[in-house]
Image (cartoon, helix red, strand yellow):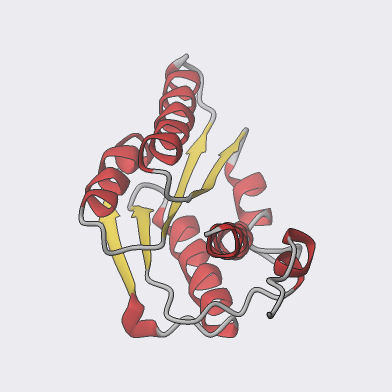
Length: 159
């Protein structure tokens, strides 16, 4: 009888066979979100996710990410979804409302669909902070893709 690997072993080996991934990308602040998308795609490719198994859907802004991700999840074709967006603080309370709505929406989707939705939504005080998170110091889109792959691996291991 072969023993299934434990959770710790799964986290160190995230080569995912036959994974289908949806990616929701906000068009608002596209200079940043497109760099996040490139990071996510590069990471997925590096971990053996076939490009034909990836669906990219663009939505107007971060506020629309949860509903767009929900539509992907309702299709029941994806092992997980990556949410990519950027919310930059301005001089009004709008920042707080958008951040809270996106965060709550993604949490709700994870729990309601029992399918991982990786949170790759930057919430920064200024454009430079957002650029730093897709530059030489790392790419938050790539990190969201890694988180998604780990969650898919955990789920597959527990089944």
